[in-house]
Image 1: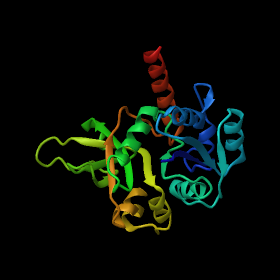
Image 2 (image 1 turned 180 degrees about the vertical axis):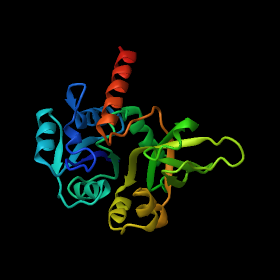
Image 3 (image 1 turned 90 degrees about the horizontal axis):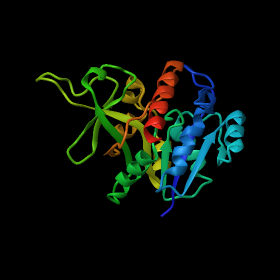
Length: 244
């Protein structure tokens, strides 16, 4: 079975233009993501998919694998599906290019989650979230059934703590798809819930797909703003010190 990790990476971010190349501990952020993908034991190959030559050149200069995709790709999943057409595999892992804290162990855990049952088509990860962080709309929450299936994702604090304090799960930005499923997902039109919450995975739930959630080994930080980059800089520094 061939498992390929693809890192969709675009230059034209609305809130943080050029963020894949923003320096993080002296290296472009996208290279930190690529390094983690290369170290994941369950991936046969790790590729950056981008529509920008500046990003492509930075990856090539680091000895990385890169594929150029169309600038018209509407989402990371669309970019992934386009790249997948020229990279045959059985399973594809969508590793967000703005998640520099995504660890190799997390990537492997996400793959293990889909491999646990051949009927699973999509997998992702979540980690326990302190209640005082649940109201942050930039932190996506997921409600999970007892069998690991995602019930709903939201920027709101779900479940609502009507009968005492609730426990929350933070969704991490990584997805694993079987090849046939990925091509079908890319053909789906935007859905009402997706538009309301600005969460692409709700499109899949509305279309009847099931998303299976593994428990992350460690937390991650999604970088959407320069302030997020500063937080990632500090967190990576603490992680390096803990390892050394």
